[in-house]
Image (tube, rainbow, N blue to C red; front, side, top):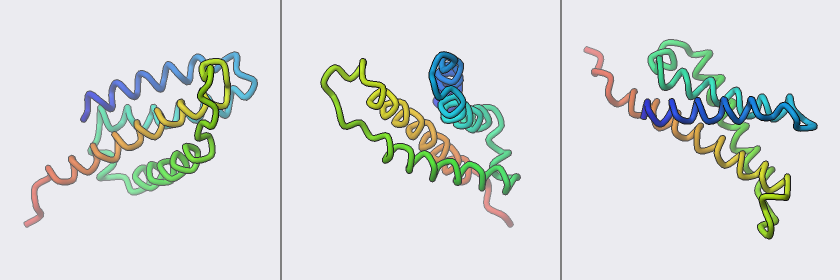
Length: 118
């Protein structure tokens, strides 16, 4: 799962960087950059989620926001979708949601792998 999270971290980081010419740059930069950071942490130092309650709480809050964002931006137009900004934003939210699910699955696997407390 660490490799998957690493790939998502790079991909979302690139998505964040190419938002420079978007009219609502800051919103979409943050929508991609914050999950990118969570993915990078899950790929490089997953134990931080276990030791930091604040990080874990922030992740689950962002996970909930990703669910809301995915529902909010759910695409409604599929004809010529590449030229419809709202549909592209919806697909972007699907990718964000997939990355957050990957982090959650990685955390679950990490928790299961830790030795039982004696």
